[in-house]
Length: 117
Figure 1: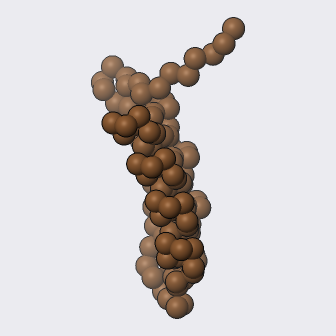
Figure 2: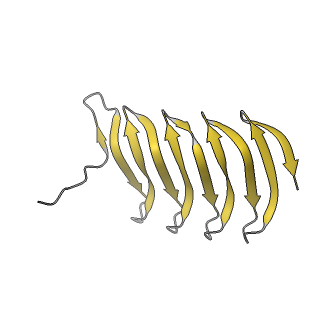
């Protein structure tokens, strides 16, 4: 027997639960991820209108946590870095739209402590 994935559900109070997908009017996937009692949890992905990945990262209890990547609409990496409890943490790298590294920032508890150009 084949399993059917249930998406875009709410509980009886209208709170988002389970796996969600949202689409642009063109039919291209805009975003997808999991809600637990209305709070983002786990891996989330957001896409540009052209279908290329825009943002990929994870949530724990609704806060950004772990490694994140953001991409230009041409598919090149825009920046990457890690979050801890919703705050930027450690080394973040920023790239131009051709993929060349422009600069790095070092964060501690969401505060920039160093910029390397």
